[in-house]
Length: 420
Image (cartoon, rainbow, N blue to C red):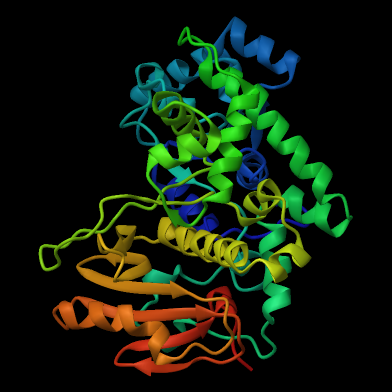
């Protein structure tokens, strides 16, 4: 156990995987806490960003991973890619003992599928930035969609935050380093360094071997354009124009940001019962703090700018739901809904099993039934057994009903605190 470790919602999934399977791959954005979480479970580690340890693995990867003690953490695998082949052969030779290898590092296999030898031999865990439940609540509780039918699926704390508190929390974001930097009043410096590394070192790594030169400054410009449009249903051509790029170049940068887990589009929902739904995804940066920094807004800016405030709060809540969905033991998929003319729009549609839950995000403190009208419309379109419920998240203090199986819930209701 690491002293001062912040329990992650994904910890229960990681423990379950290690008890059942020989190899685990932890992926996620840079500085999200992958190594810290892996070290909590590992009994030994090969840190391949350290030249001395990397040299041993480069000389003989099979010998380097053979002795353990296990679980053995192989950190930053991309510095010695042949180690993956060694893991493959070790797993193939002795499949049954679980919990032997934990691998962390680049997700570049998403762009270089032919270089990834562990398909079918490894379980994967996605780690996202810290959520409110991990920072302030009960991260050990079952994921939201695994406890959906319990009365305490949303447990509001006795003294929930107000709108200014939520703005501060969203501005912090969920990168552990950014949260610490914010407390030390050096958040701006941390974010600047983070972006600089992402658009230089990470770009070089992902572009290696494809014979195509990419510009860090152009990627920075595209990332900023994505931040300005976060939580928007925006065609790729509009993002390209906003960044001053041609569509092909913008599409390449979008793929890179997705691999780096800095962007995660929410696809459009489709149903045979509903016609004229848009097919465009909803664009999201995966961290609200990073999005706000790239937008150039602080607390005062968010107080004045209604559009920016809505985008950042929506991005923050979507990040919370994403982590809950990833951690679920069942299959959970996130979508958004929008009709082609924009008459109906729902921020998030979540399918779990054969059921559908609908979510709206509002910066107001006391949403009314009118704020739930699109969710109510969806409820009336679906068979009763398919509609699992609807929620309007808001910045006020109370949880209350807004209609048939639709309720208003403070954003802090996602934190899993026991109400007192």
